Length: 221
View 1 (cartoon, rainbow, N blue to C red):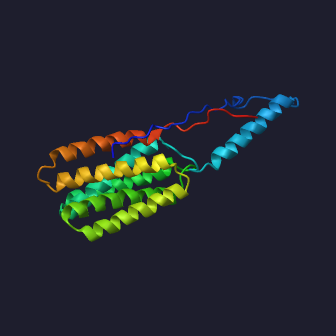
View 2 (cartoon, rainbow, N blue to C red):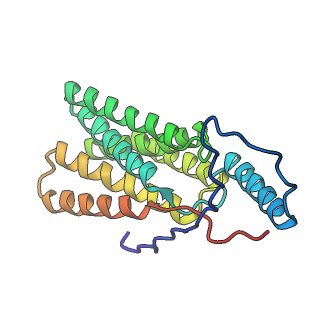
View 3 (cartoon, one colour):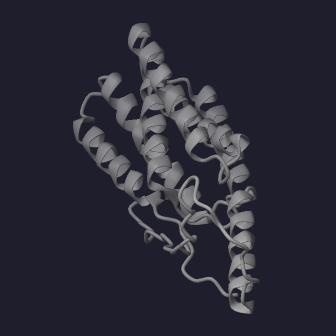
């Protein structure tokens, strides 16, 4: 599809925390905090609790470092499926390891924002997209339909877990175009050179749309 949605990234700023006293410094009795200071401390504690229990609810864009790993995973699974289907087993093994490493990094970077099961849902979308394209190009149409059903199932899980519709759409399109670029390239599809270039261009396009900065715009006390 050529209907591109806007990059809906949100920005926010964080309050500065008071500097800690130098190690070994002698401190006298502290005066009681003013009402404004006490309110500020309660707000910081509340904000920290909110951040610590953050979830993907309403997430319209992935943090840039997680988005980078998601794109790497999509490309890795795309080439894993294509190389496996055309029996380039050595290349397929390297592609699978690369994709799995990217998924592992997504889990580490997303701690506190993305649950492991949510990352696994994305993994299913990426890997099944790869197999759907490879199987369709190879002529295994029944397998391709099952792969497409799996993509749909786990995309719905992402929506249920709080990903915004635009983000899920962009993730699916990123995986779709990565997969078809790999399948047509590896399959030596006659007359598909322009398709490979087109899918690669769209893969890069959607890779940019999924990432951004997610921070708080304002805090009310």
